[in-house]
Image 1 (cartoon, rainbow, N blue to C red):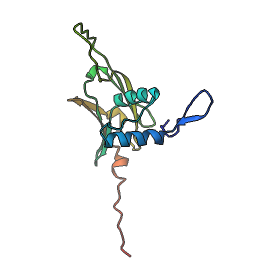
Image 2 (tube, rainbow, N blue to C red):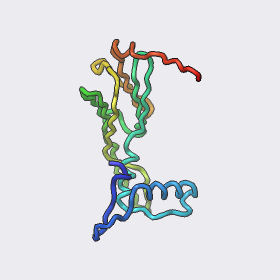
Image 3 (cartoon, helix red, strand yellow):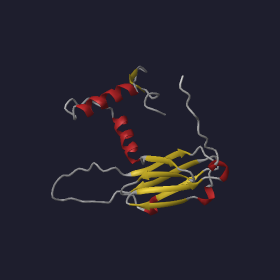
Image 4 (tube, rainbow, N blue to C red):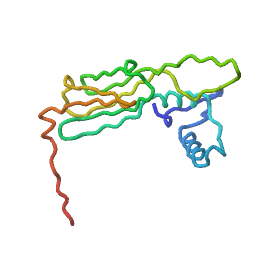
Length: 163
């Protein structure tokens, strides 16, 4: 559910904040570099952490294949799972585990994100899912789906007529 659809309620059941307020706060905070740091609620911060773990994806199409690329920096290959459903949804999931660190000399902090993630990408093409393969190098996962013969012949040039 998107932030615009979510609303938080206080004990009196009155709306406190909608997504557009958070978006505006982010815009102002980013523009001024945090000098006018507007307060955020704890649930938003927790949602932000889960969004940081979700991989950014790119879907490309060429004549023969559809390629889904995902940024997964710092995640070992054996911690990544790929599944494709029969109705054409690719799910990339996994876990970024926290290394246990102890520091006895003083306090420290970490802005690193750890936890599970899952990202589902719709694939609206007729693809050969059984012939798919994946490559993982330098934190970039690429999943290549060959198009079926039927899908390869679907493109048609459309002429533009000037009036």
